[in-house]
Image 1 (cartoon, one colour):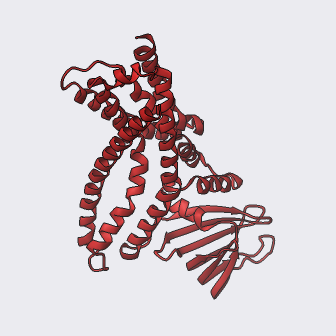
Image 2: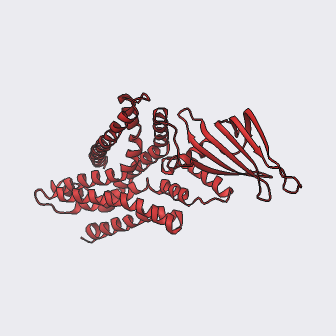
Length: 368
């Protein structure tokens, strides 16, 4: 059995790597064409070809994370179909490779793909994507969201704060920060504006070029406004750099831990966390789809192929992989709009394909 496992694992790993490299090459081409347009627009700022190449390279981990289940499905289908066409799998079956043993062999290999997908999506991809965004911000301006930037909330003992961050600079500093302070009754008590801010490691922000406008208590007979200007000011809070980055960057580019912490922060401040909860559960279930893909590919080893028929089944595997990718994205949007349970929204595509794969396994493998 060690020889059989070595044969299957070697063929599947080679095929999956080949498919992944092919898809990545296609994405590199598209990304590079898009960056060539940026070279002309930002040439005056010093954006050169080497920077465009570096940015495209930093996008590769994110693309690899998204493509892994598709590459696993197509690569495994190709190997299983080729084994069936050349009658190699028939020989393996006569050597003692029964359906359940074959399934168990592929599931062990699938677990390896699960670990690889999780590692790329949770550790490599967030760091590479953040580095790429900061690289572009160095030459193309700060990172921002929409026209007004990102909004966050902070709740403390005797006050509540609404924080607006205009953008994120290439050095990690925050630009155009506005802090609205509300008292316990919900009245606006002060507005603090800062040209820039740095997030310190001790749960505090250092504000620079600060203009503070205070509104005294409303129970006084004379209304007045007090304005002060300071070069720097320390503002204690619980909003970390990762939370600000989460509000400015796409949630799917965050790690699982950062997503969980940001969800806790949103819920503690009575904010909607539906979108981020869906992305959190996607991070949990998406790597497990590699197991579903290897099970879906196993029945192809029990089919009978005519000459040249393998291409049709490989094309069907490509369509199945693309449909899974599209279904995963569509369910995310629908779940967010319809307010579905986040874990169910993230798990539904995998559950649907699990039923399909087990049905195909039961009909083609066990019954026939």
